[in-house]
Amino acid sequence: MFTTTLIPSDKPFLSVVWTFGSENIITFSGKNITGPEYEGRITLFMSTGSLELRNLDLNDSGQYSLSIIQAGGPGKTGSTTLNVLEPVSNVTATASSTDLVEFNSSVRLSCSSSGSSLSFLWLNGSSEVTASDRVHITDGGSTLTIVNVTHYDQGPFRCRVSNPVSVGTSDLITLSISYGPEDINLTISLSQEYYGEGSDITLSCSADSRPAALFYWFLNGDFLSDTGPELRLMNIQMSQSGNYSCQAFNDKTLRYETSQPAAVSVLERISGAFVTPTTSLTIEGIFVNLTCDAAGSVFTRKWMKDGSDLTLAGNMNLYDKNKVLSFNSLKTTDSGEYSCNTSNPLSNDEAKYTMVVIYGPENVKITGPSEIDLGQSFTLTCSADSTPSATYTWILNGTEIHNSAEFTKNNTEVSDSGSYACQAMNSITERTSTAVHGLSVTDRRSGGLSAGAIAGIIILCLVIASAGGAVGGHYVYKNKINNKAPPPSDNKEKEEPVYENTSAVYENL
Image 1 (cartoon, helix red, strand yellow):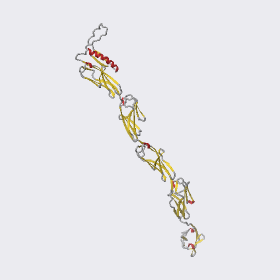
Image 2 (cartoon, helix red, strand yellow):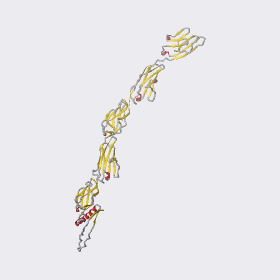
Image 3 (cartoon, rainbow, N blue to C red):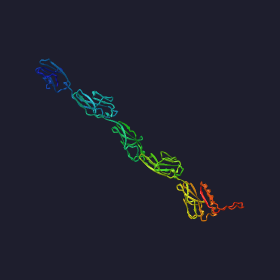
Image 4 (cartoon, rainbow, N blue to C red):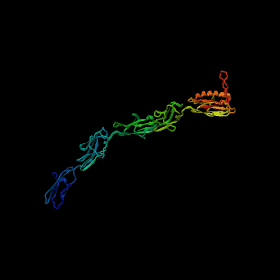
């Protein structure tokens, strides 16, 4: 429709002439004269001089002119240009290849279409493709070349063709670009710092790759026979501890990538904890080590004594990461129950050892009467500090008379008076210690002792004095003499003194 700017008026047109270039389309000068090629294709509107042209073809493109003469007025002219375009159709996009390798391959995409005055636009998905160092757009936009493709260039691509009157779009082209492997990742099921022997562990490896990557496994850099994205470690043992890594391989790109190593630390659970001494004869004053150990992976050892945390005395030391508790000189106060707790992050076990320090005998003591009447009974008891318990031997006036902690005598006689020595002996330390106790048997019915008894006591006193010096003490013998001694005789030899009505008393000083 060629529409003029004229407004219908009551003044008729005297002449209307439409031309196409130099060719007459229609002339009105009282009657219509239509060019033969426009018969049936045009309509002239006499009120405004507008013209409708139908069934356009490409040859209708050009300049159209109008000349009008109106009654009572000057002539008027006007012109316009018409572009007749062929609609876009048959838009087709093709690729030089769709099977490509990332960084190695290049591809050329070509677009063709029917139509005229065509414009070409390439789309990747919904985004317009623009030129760059790797992307070249040539041949008026109909050719798209991508150099050294990446897997982001896979598309889908399509070509959009347009002109001012129509738009057409090609089918999608998707490129198959082999790439990778990349972004490799190694994970462990139930990831933890330590695993107990016998555990089941699954390691999984993944990587971004086309086609899918092949996976190989390594332990401490050594190739394992296992393949595939999963490595199953069943009933794992300590020998399988180490750094695991996986390698992804793409048999199309011929590239591979190796993961960061993942540490798998396998621990043997602790069992059978024990404490052993260097000797079974833990005698006071000797050097002794207590060693704490267990089957399994021992990380820590903690010592206790009698249920409380062990406090190291001056004669104690810990060595070898608390494995050895050392006593440089055993003391009796070291006796007690020692426990050692062995542990690792997965388990623990405790062992106990009772230390009995062997010592003595010492502090030997005798309890019992020091004076008793003739015919009565008496008991003397001997005691000593000793581990194990001491054995006791009684000695009267140098003669062994009994072997027991207690010595009992019924119906005593004057001859039972004297110095009673108790000798305590430790069968392991092989040490002995002796105490002495004086006992006097008095015959109160006769008012005193016989001369023979007194003489015997004097002899005994000498023996006791000698024995007392050996055990660090002594006894004093006191005489009470009621009668004067006879004058000395003329005999130059020393005469034996005679004592009467004499009593003897022993005092332990």
